[in-house]
Image (cartoon, rainbow, N blue to C red):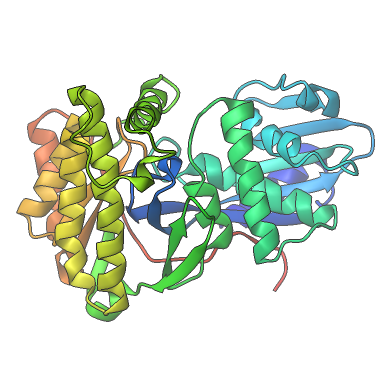
Length: 379
């Protein structure tokens, strides 16, 4: 069953009857542009087919009941939400309600199911936030066209930053709400501007292989926040609003700040290089750009891990055109751009490398650029 069908079934089991609607939002893979969204940078993510779905039925008594298979049931009030007093996983959903602050929202029954792997660096949290945001916005009669979705994405980012307490940028929410099938999304994190960039690896006999290292992707242990603070401090010392305005970081005396800043500046350049290649239809040229990104994330930004490095190195050695870690790092997933006929041999090589080093057994999926959040109980 799909996540949408699953959440409708869960809703009937938990609450009885039918929801007012079912909405879903995708996870994402970022092709290039990692750890630059909070530096006003450029990113090039794509949505994936794996989705988080929510079934919602409005209430009028100020109560919000949240249910998800595998997670603790949570009942709160709208007043609890206003006070940011929501624990655990439910904070991601409740935080969206808080950030939207819609006066005509007076409670809801809500169930969640997902086939976006949790902890794999594929943005399961943003998928949940965006599905809830689209559901609440539509039920309250708000704009859900592209301009409205840009506003919803900003609200979801505030929810994660200020309600949940994870200082992410806006990329994950923007791609989850605004993606177009068969395209990557060039996102200017300074202006919020977007451009859909054609990306059809299958047409070039290529595949995007996502390698879930099975090493949990954790952002709340302080490492992500430390990197963000370093980027902000580097900009302050260089006298600029953000590292988007910098080309040369040699004036930074602290070697750690210099490396962090160098990653951001060069990664923004790699995004531009990737877009130029895709606009020219030269998808294979992404390979060396992916490789350079991983080196920078490993050596300058220091957010890789032994599991990620093992997967990336083994994929390259087995014939991948390029490979890199994706997401916040410290675990999670990597991606490899492969010849379509080489996916199996590359997967075997990654498994062998992990087993040889005593690492968790990786999991694999090929992904194609998918559409953004939508209502999924209507044709």
